[in-house]
Length: 96
Image (cartoon, rainbow, N blue to C red):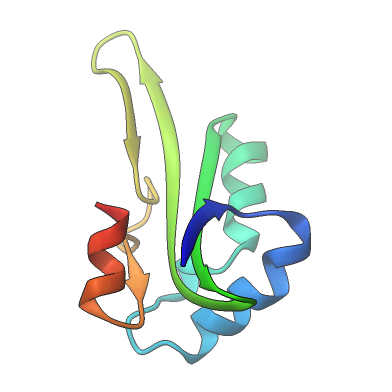
């Protein structure tokens, strides 16, 4: 298993995983990556864990930079949902 950044060719598999996961929300879908980058100008780091070609977990991250608060990563600012979405707790732990 390996954690890697989301690539364009992975978006279909990412979204299929999200659609079938009981731990996901619509905000885990890969399309929000472009919305956040274009609307707010933030850099995103969408991480996925896969075993072979099978996605086993995802973590959408956004880098926020602020003079007041500093430079930090959050999972989906401006939304009430986000975080790790994974098949098992063991896979979730790999993102931490």
